[in-house]
Figure (cartoon, rainbow, N blue to C red):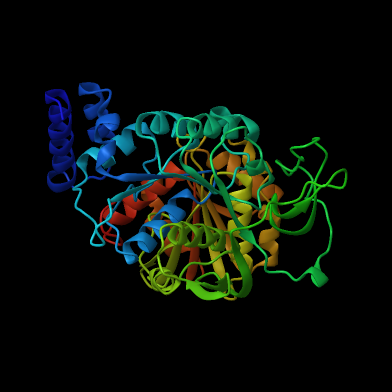
Length: 452
């Protein structure tokens, strides 16, 4: 370690201590920014301290990263991670340079499990040479930042090519992940919970992205669709089909807003979080665990933990009301949240918060592709809107058939808003920076520990 690198680490750790222990604020971006300003090559110099797993894709990165962390810890590994979703270069640098690295109890090298923003994969991979890339899905998201989905995947491929010895563990239900001219070993996970006798060949809904065959660009058909462009696909023009799955969901027993029960490779499992899309996140973590030789029974125990995930179906109580915070940022993610709300058997209210900062995506036109109309199929009793772009969201929800909305432009009113809603259950669907502002207000009011 050079003098420059040592100074970078000391400065980063000192700023982290000041932020967390003195000012009681969260964040790793400032420590990372300081470290990089002192030593631009700091990541390359610390990579020998641990094995690196990069988790990337459009939706599910934060929860998947948290589940992988729990699974590997259950398998006896020391794990470093970025739990608050700080997934760009400065935040990741801050996470790594401030981490207290200890040998794993099993004698293996510690593992850094990092959620990485798609546009930052190449920078991280070039500096650190990961052992594994975990690819969750790619959907249309933040067009102002990423462009269309094939542009996003090209950014990821550029990163993969920096580490040709790394295993690429990808969602086989996503056709786009069968593309790519990299030479890495590929392994796939996906759903096989429907028997062939129950197949119902179909095409994806109108406006679905990523459903073109990589062989001739024809529109793929599906034996079944789980959601969006995910499912068991095949081409009608040649012999292209979904790749063989190394890990698969073999059955689904229960889908509720609070938990799901299912089997992966015939191992019965339960996760304490609702939604079909979160079974994908659990499947991903299961696959990573098995790749690192974690016993399925230990994975099962790791999944049964009910520890809260930052802003991802985070449950809390506000003056007698059961409040659940869910992150929304694009049409597919929002539709998945609405599908989860359809399984809610009790009356509930929805507080929807829309910001348009860089981390949210400046272009908010995506709300017009989200299927808010499906909320009429739920037990929803009231809708309120807020955030910096509340006007856009208010109009969208009016068009979806919800004309009567309370409006809270100022998020300092958020606790008042929750109390004013008529039901005992409240779902808060918020974009990223709105979620941070929400948590800050809830923290200041004593409903959660800290705002970040």
